[in-house]
Image (cartoon, rainbow, N blue to C red; front, side, top):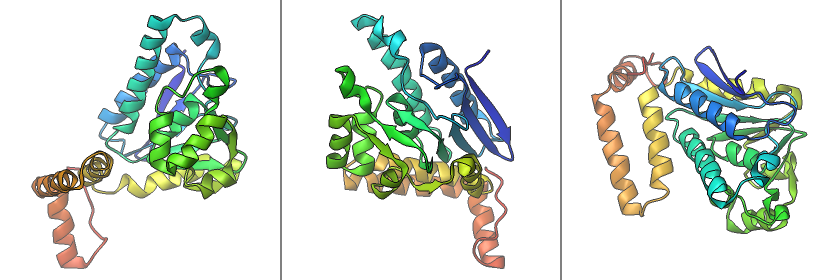
Length: 258
């Protein structure tokens, strides 16, 4: 039975972790996650993606029992596979929303950090507790978290390993919105639905410009932006958008994703 499912409805693909009780990230789950992510990336009928662990928990971290039995070569391979899949998620050329319920700890929080937006349940608890195991986050926590909340706040969470509740997560910019626990998935779907009818190629270009541009010097980032902007002039959606604007005013185009 697959530990990760891809469910598609109304243009939104939900990548759902299904390894109860805590969705611990094992090698097998990572392999299934890779398959789901690749399919969600390639399918043209999927215009936005939601990452979801179910009603009770997002993902409570890596499978420590599995990790503990690995030698240095084994853990190097294990973490390479996990970080590779997380990079694929971060590179999905579509809006990605993490719907976080319950615990998102260690690798679970690192998974949520790969998303463009994070919707937290009001009872969510998140953190990077790796320091309490004598190691550090190894799947993006020391890199994606400071880029999101700043170095000082990231160091506080990484150095202490403490858990953060939803209200604090929202205050520091880790959560984009907080809703009642029974509304998290619906809110994530609603947010994803805002982009389903949008110009898919322009959304992909915007995501690339922001994500890749943030890693470049400003002059290089501006050249990247210009190149992506010019490239969109060859798309059907650009023609439809501008023709619609001239004829009917802004915000009324029916895009086709080409």
